[in-house]
Image (tube, rainbow, N blue to C red; front, top):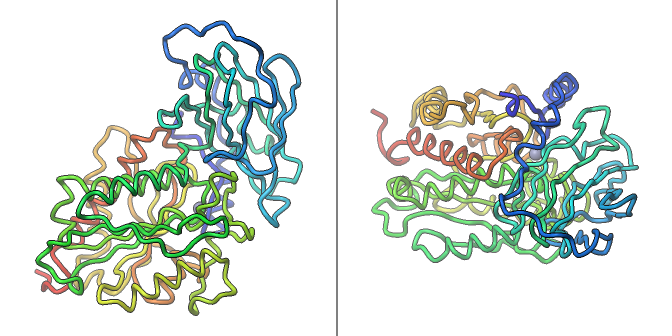
Amino acid sequence: MIARLTAGSACAAAVLLAAAGAAFLAARPRAPAAERAAPAAPAAAPAPAPARELAPEDFVFDGPIGSQGARIEKTGPNQFLLTLGHAPNQPTWCNKVGFQIKRHAAGNSLRLQVAFEGGKQYYFNDYFQSWSYDGKDWKTIRWNKASKDAKVEDTLVFPTFAQDTVYVGQQVPLSYEDVAAMAAEWKKTPYVKVHAVGQSLGKRDLLRIEVADPASPHPPRSRWVHYVSNQHPGEHNSRWRMVGMIQWLLGEQGADCRRRTICHFVPFVSPDGPSNGWYRVGAQGVDMNRSYRAEGSDPAQAHEAYLLQKDLEALMKSEAPVTTVWAMHTWGGIVEPICQPGPEMDAKVGPWTDLRDAIVRNDRAASPLIKPLKLATGGGSNTWSGGPHKQFGVTAFLCEGGGSIYTKEENLRSGAILMKGLAEYYKGTKEDKRE
Ligand SMILES: [Zn+2]
């Protein structure tokens, strides 16, 4: 299916894989215009006659999904040039496209030419964009070119809007404020504790959401513990995957797993990212998946990384140390989990291939959402998968892909499948003898 062929640029760990991703991008076919327009079809209601054309002052770039340093100028009737800003201290790293039209959208269409003048280090158009009237129900919109040659200039053509307010972001957007609101709801159940590990430089809480059944008959020391975090703030789909894991755990199917495990979710290592359109960094401009320090946490690390690594180190010293660490990312294609096994694999639980098979078994849709788990062929010490693996010897997963999953529902389902697979593979408790 064409949708699955659209690759994003590689996101994280291996330079080799990054190069492969770029090659794939260069080779992919361009989608015909009819297909690009299809997913963005507006609601059936006829658009009212516009009160006036859109003007630059109707656009807001500092909302929950924003783009720091973006400049917009009018080039024609409902046509604009958006010039993107760059990441802090990284003049060649473009920010992503995120904004709100706060008024006057109804009855107007929008042709948005986007440009970045800082070079070709990263793409602003490597993933699809989404738009919405309410910031919740997102429709896909594709770039006109989305090709390697168009790294510095590309265009989004929106249909005629039916409402005055419009939200735009990349992948399926998920802001810090969205997650904080979800956490407040989850906290109402007996199974969720929301920890603020500290604050970002932008004064947002560094959230760690802990899911476990407090009425479990199994003492904490005997439970499997999973630690799942998102490093790159522009990789929204990977956060929806995490929300899917949490929702599965909190549902009826997750009841047994809630008793046998403790799960920690850090939805943002860079909570200031989404409102600024930062793809990979925090306010200091450090790539957040190059921010781990396998030798041990140190105040010289990026601010947020230091606080979160210290918190992980405290968990490792607690009565319920972490069994697996998951670093959640997005690159092109479907979800792509990659494993560095720890000591429990093939000892207290089955071989890693049992986990691979459990995930595949649960991925039942006609079009799979997750590639079969594979083993890593190396791993750095400054990433949030390789780093904890080196520091503690624990099982670590780099979970990539998902950049070609266009809906919130499918991203959520990919997370539910991973969590169910984990629940099935990590049978019983740590203290059970393997059968
Ligand atoms: Zn990433």
